[in-house]
Image (tube, one colour):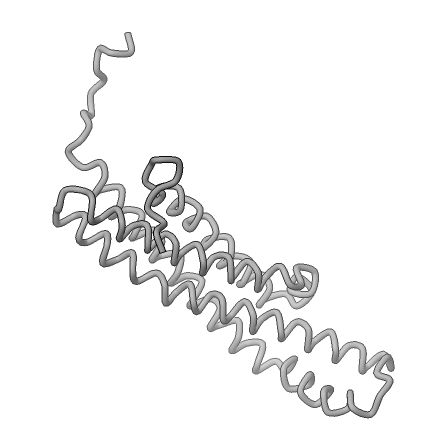
Length: 184
């Protein structure tokens, strides 16, 4: 897949900004939905879609970064950034899996509320209510929250570290800290 150029310019800077924003937003939405079941229900299918789009964007960013790496001058900073960049994919996969899991937990909680209110009509839903009870148990919710926090914080930290190394690779030694006379 050739994702190196968009409109004749390297695609990596475009993708990387989108990925940085979406990883952060998805991580935040994941934690909020893991904390508050009602938020998970309100966001509904948007949460797992965010996780999927984030994963796809991280893969595009990594692919376009590898394309760009082959076309810029080699340096230790570029090499470090490239190695760190490929480390974001597992975090994005974990975010996606957890967004689906938290979404399913929110749906199970909704199913349990319907059971309590007497909206369950068929005997087949009785088996589903046992699964809903387990999924909406405090232990399951706490475990999901802890894992969501670990993955969200890990992904956000990784995005920061990768962005910092990328900025150093792109800009270190390429500008002056004092103003030039060009703008006067």
